Amino acid sequence: MSTFSFLETTTWQCNSCGLPLQPAKVTATYLGGSFNVELMACPQCGFILVPEDLAVGKMLEVEQLLEDK
Amino acid sequence: MEALSPCPPAPPVTPITLYEQDELSELTGGALRPGGIALTAELLTYCNLEPGSSVLDIGCGPGHTLNLMATNFGLTPTGLDPSASMLEKAAQQAPTAAILQGTATAIPCGQSRFDAVVCECVLSLTGDVAASLQEMHRVLRPGGVLILTDIYCKRPELQPDLPDLQSCASRALPLDVVTDGLAQAGFALVSLRERSDLLKQLAGQIIFSYGSLEKFWQLFMGAEAARRTCCALAAAPLGYYALVAEKEARHG
Image 1 (cartoon, rainbow over the protein chains, first blue to last red):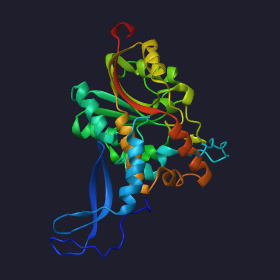
Image 2 (cartoon, rainbow over the protein chains, first blue to last red):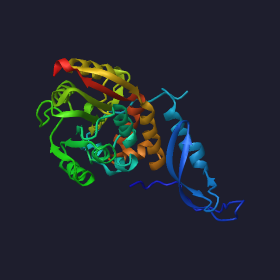
Image 3 (cartoon, each protein chain N blue to C red):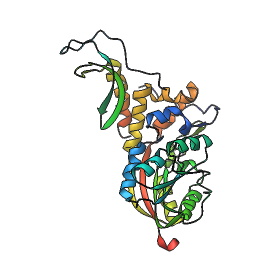
Image 4 (cartoon, chains in turn brown, red):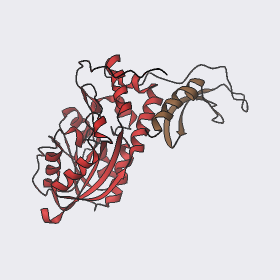
């Protein structure tokens, strides 16, 4: 079982719905790949918070992986 | 510019059978290989086997392909695997399938017994590709089809030097070794698909699920061995193929 998670307590809330974000299983499509990941999302409209660690860290690692060597 | 440091030598570790690890099962929807059950369904659809056709799944693992063949395609599957624990899972997953314990190099079945043979991400693990392909050819009826998928090594001189890991990634073969072996065994190649995108997809999912490839390998080995495994895999260009071959009638 994976012990790693991008989920984190956050003070961000959905601007449109005014609701606090909750953990959600989402599918991220990136560079032609499709990945399952748990992120904080608005429980009403589904708007997803992409944390900085994911955007500039893991996405870069995946990008390097998906590029042809 | 910072100089690149070479991979450290392999420390002694206990051999690990990767496909028996629950973590890989979770990542692949139980199928334990790149592409998962969706690629299997794609290839079975392509082969258009008659309902009731007898199909041998070599290295059936926990039986997801057996279940797919019986439930979605109306086929009559038989599973073969050396692992008793995997066969136990396969019997639960596909209760109508016949289950056999054995290896690809000595298939415990008579000749011309099957209409099709499926072997997914297993061939490079069998230890003797030529003997395995000859056995697959022997148990197929003339005109029967072989569905074969596996990791391959794009540049043989850069074969990954991994710790003692029972995985197709550590024994990846050059693709021409496989195609030459097929021809020598008496198979005609019908379709060869380059599906390295599926290998990258699985590696990307590992990063999203475990934080990094190194953390994933640390589940099965020490930190140093995990670092070395990542280092070796990053340097080795690996790909994934899916092919369909036919047993030529004259060899029947």
